[in-house]
Length: 184
Image (cartoon, rainbow, N blue to C red; front, side, top):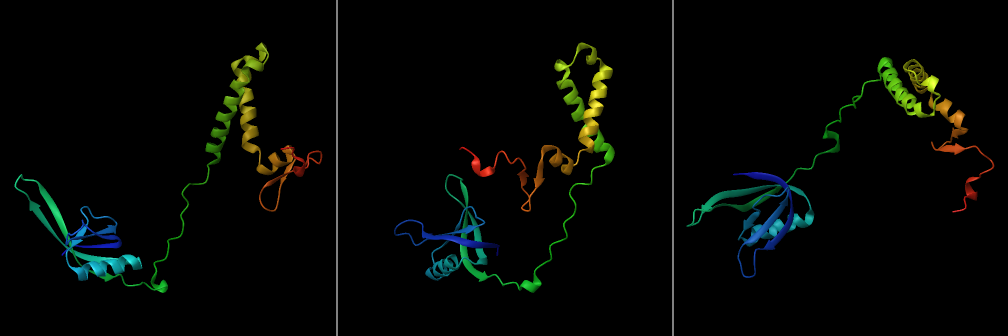
C-alpha cells in the first residue's frame, strides 16, 4: 500500500450531493486523494486542522473508460501521526566548510593589475601625447595595480577622512556638514 508523508491542506466535497470527498496534501498528489467514507473524511479534517505532518496510507488504481483514456484514482485509507522527535535526538549540523579558498597573492596581484590596466587605458585621452606610449601606459597600469593591491580599508578610511563607528557604519569627520543639517 503506497504512503506519503505530508500535511493535509484541504478537505472538501467534490460537488454538491456527491459521496466523494477530496483530500489535498502538501506535498501535492496529482490527482489528489479521495474518500467516500465519513470516518476517513472526519479524520482527514481533524488532521488538516491540527496542521501536523502525518503518514497517509492510500490505495491507487488505474481506470480506463470506453474511449481508452486512462486515469488514476487514489483512495484515502488512514493516516498515522508522525512521531515527535526529541530535541536531543536531532541530527547535528555539520561544521561549515569554507566555500572559497583564501586568495592567492599572485591571483590578487593579477586582478589588481588588470583593474590598473583598465584605469590606465581609460586615462589615455587625458594624457599628453608623449605619455601615450605603450611603455608609459604599462607603467601607469602597474602603478594603479600596486596602489589597488596595497591599499587597506584603514588606509582608505584615513585618506577619505572617515572612520569606523561602533555600529560598523562609517562616520564622516567634516564638522562643516553635521548630519542633522541636511536640507532635505
